[in-house]
Length: 93
Image 1: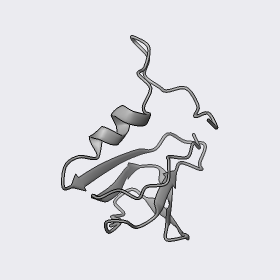
Image 2 (image 1 turned 90 degrees about the vertical axis):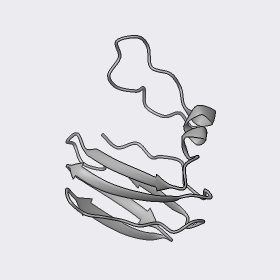
Image 3 (image 1 turned 135 degrees about the vertical axis):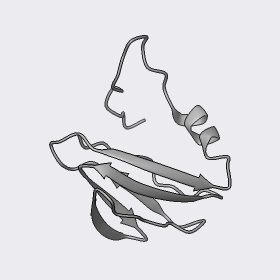
Image 4 (image 1 turned 180 degrees about the vertical axis):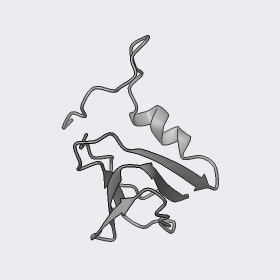
C-alpha cells in the first residue's frame, strides 16, 4: 500500500529494482512509475523517494554502494512485533 519513505540524500548510491507490482519513484522532482524489471540508478546526493501508490503488494530489490545505508534504518526504523509481517503506517513525526 502507499507509504512514503523518507527522502534520501545519503552518501551511497541506491539502485532499486521492482520485482513485483509498481513503485513510483521521485528522483530530482521527476516522477517515474516503475514496473517489475525496471532498473533505477540514483547517484550520490540525489534527492529521491519511492512509494507504492497501487492497491497491490509490491516488492523491490535495492542494492546500495558503498555499504553503510543500513545505519539509516537503525536510526529511523521501528522494530516489528514478534511474528508481525507488516509494519504500521508511517507517522508524521
